[in-house]
Image (cartoon, rainbow, N blue to C red; front, side, top):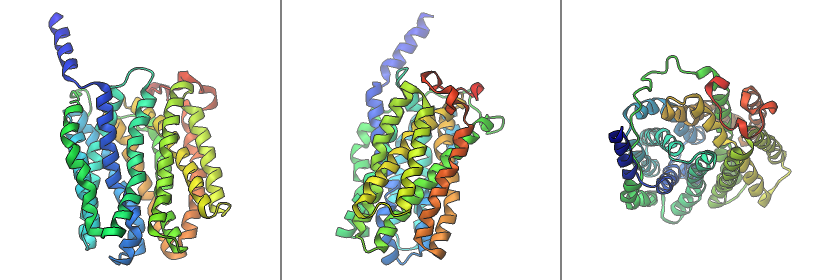
Length: 406
């Protein structure tokens, strides 16, 4: 008994402080998602300088997101093996792939670089999400998850505008400079990211797992991904087609994703206080209203930035609640559950986004953007099917969703 306590104490002493761990993972998430999602900032240049087709350019973000469907499988491996190497090496692969998209002139090499980005994203996110949930104090899980997700959102917000400015000033071949922060801070990250224990009870296969109760949450994540991908891809192209500058168009994505940091922080904190139901429903209503304002041209010019910012804040406010709900359903497989909630849902969303590229190529950018309002209205269906999000379950007691409660 004493030996067990001593061993447990020694293991705790060897682990970095939770605050440092969260800080290191937030920084890695910022770098990883910034490199993986900077593509909107150079879309017009890929069309004008590399002569890529509009269909290919419109599908690039969807291809990156599609690869996330493999996250559950990497999550299974992470649960069974433990360790920390997925968290450490994932952003390195993402950075290398992000550089390749910009510097390689051929479509084949660009697609190979997208595969490398997909590998980096897939190995990093499931284990990192499980680590964040494992290393926080009780009652603050939603806020900690929000802080982690904000790191990625800041990367996605700043990545496009930074790389757009870099490419316009110095050319696409200088985009490799974006990878320097990964190299320079990697030694510090190694010190502060802990090694997770192996979960021997975790399954090696997907058979027998509770996918049925998780299905509405996966559908919700997929439809949300369609909105994020569609707005991130087509709003810069719409701006450019109307005579706007490349950097200004990229900053539309910055407004969308950057405001998501505010919504994410508020959504995670409110989830801990009032439960997930009110957060999810209010954010969905706001998305529908603001999308209608954008699509029906109620907002013009500079007003597009605050409207897109409001949509981004609403899109990300409910994200901590959705991811943690899936984690609770797959509580015996935390990394795999994280991969299902984040990657698998996003991957399905990427598949559903391909028709938007077809619409844009054949009927124009306007109809492709208009279709996003219908996607937002469809989100009412999965939200209505989650028991813990229904009106009679609202309140702080519903903040923890268990599989048996589904």
